[in-house]
Image (tube, rainbow, N blue to C red; front, side, top):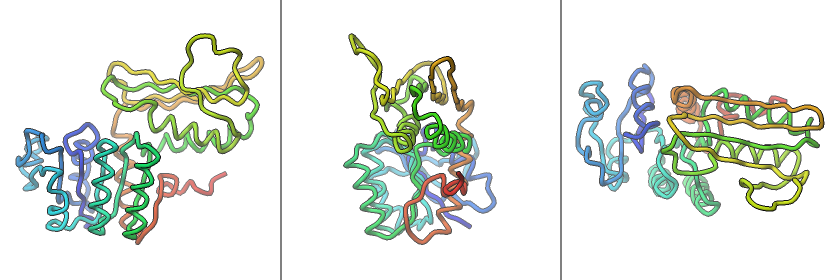
Amino acid sequence: MIKVAVTGAMGRMGSGIIKTILNQEDLKLVAAFEAPNNPNIGKDVGELLGLGKINVKLESSENLDRVLRETKPDVLVDFTIAHACVENVKIAAKNKVKLVIGTTGFTEEQREEILKAINENKVAAVISENFAIGVNIFFKALEFLSKKLGDYDIEIVEMHHRYKKDAPSGTALKAAEIIKKNRGGYFVFGRKGMTGERKKDEIGIHALRGGDVVGEHTVIFAGDGERLEITHRASSRQAFINGVILAIRFVYEKDKGVYDTFDVLGLKDVK
C-alpha cells in the first residue's frame, strides 16, 4: 500500500486527486493540507468532498513538518502555487518523502531551490508541467515536427479558465522549450505596436484566459503555402489526474533522482 499526502487538497486538482486516490486499491490517503487561512482546517477531508468520513482531517500547511513525521507518507503530491511549493518540497525532502510536483509558475531561482532540496536529501521526484498522457504525446510529436519543419514560422497559443494565475501556462512554456532545443530560436510573448517583420527564429507564445476552459494548447507551423497545427484539448481535469496516479506509482519504486512524465510513460527514448 502506497501512503500518499496531498497539498492544495481543496483546490481543483488536489480535490480530484484525493477522490481518485480513494478509489485505488493500492493507494491510501494519510494526510491532506491547505493554506493556514482555509476555513475548513480541522474538518474531515472525506466529508468536505462529499464522500463521507475517511478519518483524515484537513491540516494547515504550517504543520506540514509535524504531520509528515506522524503519518509517514511515501509520496507527497503538490499542486499549489510556486512559493508555497518550494517550502513544501524542502520539508518533504528533509523527511525523506518522495514527490510528485505539478505546480507551475516557478522562477529559475525557485526551480533551483527545489532541485537542490531533492538532490541533497537524495529522494525521488517526478516534476511535470502537465501530467496528461495526451499532452506528453503532444510534446513528443513537437520534438519530431520542430526538427522536420525547422524553417517554418512557429507560434504557440494556449487558453485556460479565468481563474488560472500564471501565464503562459507551464505546458506552453514546456512546448516552447522543446521547440527551442530542437531548432533553436528565442521566445516572443505576444506582440504589440510596430514590431517589424517577423523574425524566422521567433517562437511566439500567446496566453488566452476565459470561461471554464480546462486547458487547450495549439502549436502552429506556418510555411509558404501551407500550415500545420497540432492541438491538445483537455475536457476534464481527470486527464491530468490519471497521469498523477501513474506518477505516484512510478516514483514509489525509485530510490532517488528527478524524473518527468516522459520517464513515467516510457517515452524518453521514443524517436
